[in-house]
Amino acid sequence: MKLRILDDSIRLRLDREEVESLAQGKKIACTTRFPAGPSFCYELTTHAGGAAAEFGNQGITVTLSTDIVNSWASDETAVSIRESMALPQGELRILVEKDFECLDPREGESQSNRFPNPKKAV
Image 1 (spheres, rainbow, N blue to C red):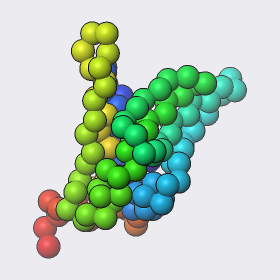
Image 2: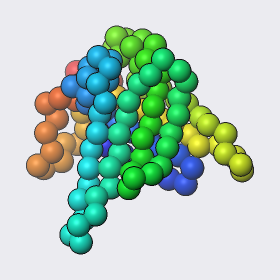
Image 3: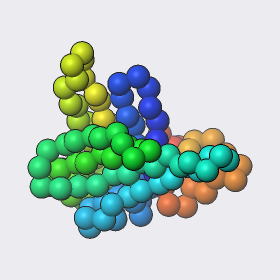
């Protein structure tokens, strides 16, 4: 799972295995370790209610509706899930996407578990 944060937005990209695991109700979690010892964790999970996002315990947890995730995961043409939550000023935007193969592959980065890129020439 890849994470991108910009101001009041969180974007997560999932490969095929992660999308399947999330649809099966499994939590997806990643950790970035730092030399001095602490770690930053980010995770994605589902539950029967609506979307939520929390920051604490050195990380971020994003929760999505089980029904929405299952519908998205089973539809090959569905690319993303968009959610938003009210903030005292503005809103927190959440974007969860299927991770496509890169059009220009990067050295040392496996493309084997990504979704086919719809912009790729056949």
